[in-house]
Length: 375
Image: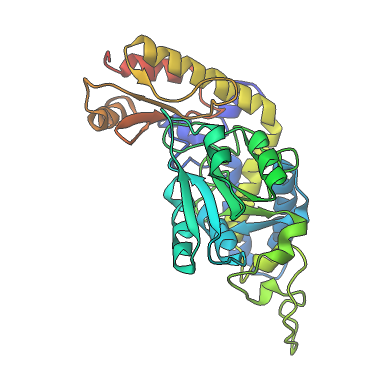
């Protein structure tokens, strides 16, 4: 697909230069149409044709393909936090256990682990070093009481990307579970749960997957499913579902045991449409496009005198570029960019944060660079 054809799939391009996909992304046209299709079906036929639970199974297969998992290892969540809590509340902890994470994590991947302190579980937050978390620091924090290493694939504030393959190999060697918050990665930087030895993963769909809020995916390696106790159960957790007159506490053997009640079918259908669009564009092509745009942005703002805080090495770059200037009020600039130029970026930790996606154009990056004052 050429750039013009891709941009046609994102109606936001008619109204804004939208460079804030690390926050809440606009829906793709296919996702919008899928949601409208669900609403029409529900209005005209209710549940009688049963189309959308079948559609959900197709999306389960798409999500599995996206991360190189088996469909039986995938289920749906409301958000990333729900998946984090599945893991945090499902492991049979013992007093003195610990979880290794980092000081750069978004709160969704912090509070569920902090809550375990009441059960005698320590959270070890490995400190950053100039916007990076050194691998050796993480390795040194793991001991014989470490049960989980819980990290974000890409850090929300500055876009630092961890080497998940290396970290997964370390966790496998140490006999430690490896959990990944993938919300700032999936859709740009591919994740392969097999190659990276990821045991569990959670990802909301409303950022780089350009899906609605309130839907996402949760992955758990098949061999581990029986070792994590569901923190919530309901009829959908059970093998017999809602069979008339039958009550039998018999959990699914796969990740569906974490389901409790009805799915967000509108959101799931929309997410499936956006994932399919990503497949149509090509996972590698999307990554190449975002790499080119973010390289252009980082070089451009640095040339104007701004300090770039996002690592840009081949193994560390992501779709997020964070930059600052001691001469300017970045929040005032953010507002000015939106109101005067219809450019949408964010401020995080006293810095401007831009996060273009594969449908953005080089002209949009140039417009942002030109609109910035000299740093």
